[in-house]
Image 1 (tube, rainbow, N blue to C red):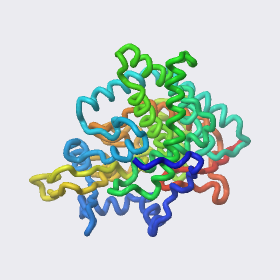
Image 2 (cartoon, rainbow, N blue to C red):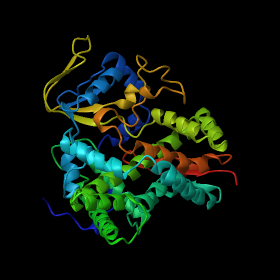
Image 3 (tube, one colour):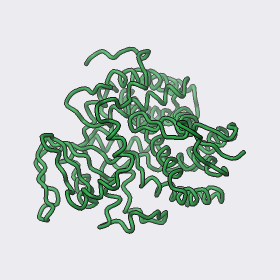
Length: 420
């Protein structure tokens, strides 16, 4: 393995999209419904000529592909292992006994009862303090929507975060690199991602040592994993604990940042969405607020869909008029975003319906790799946005500051103002 560069070489700006055509791609992904609708109707499984790339756009086809996890496999293992310098994490694994064992360990560490006991109240406390400390203006992405999940890495995960802004940028760089489009060669962002991983790993290792020494007696995630190790004769090992923490951290801050950032952007674009969400926030109806935010997220999810690689020849929609043979080695964008607007299976897909049936959503994925931290994300996002949504006159700040600024597709800055 190539030696990693020192952490001092890290600059999050290196993760920007600067290749030819990137600005056009960003615009297409920002408002994709017109061209996704065209593909669903006329070319539901397009294959890009002279490449190994295809796309899946219809609801039933997306579900079929994501359900066939042994055929359409996650392509993240090489990049994840490269940065972790250790064992595989579940996000990069196919279904296997080891996958099941590691997933069970994670579920025993990240518990459903943590939502009411820790995640929701601590997120609310942090968000209320941040919003209360503003004078009618805030960079909602950097100072709120990214900062709260980053501080939860300290308070809930048990990771010391000396510089929250830098730590958040590390996780974003790792996530952007690992979960980006698969390639046979290291991507141009690899040096920055390695530098970010080099910054994260020592903090994780120190947290493991602290947990073993009882430095922090609170029931953090790292403390629970170390307790499992003591109770099970060394299983999980230190390397596995590091892998599990690294993988969950690389998903937690970036995913919640892009999810909540995109939600806020859509609320500002669509006044009718904003009105429904603010009414729920001001009446302290957290369940309805989450349903409003979740439905808003459908209009601008964290990505167009997950990537997969075809391990063997397979025919999607076999026996139908839309049957498509996918050759081994083909890489696919499985567009859950397009699927959630497929009028064949989704009721009134263009309408804002917080009472929408759960099976019409694929925001947390589908099948084997359904988001393992979904219940944590929902509580954290709801409680973080809630105090901001309670404010009267919530609006974009004037000028460029009030427009979404991104690193790749990751929200980085968006300033809003509100009445005192």
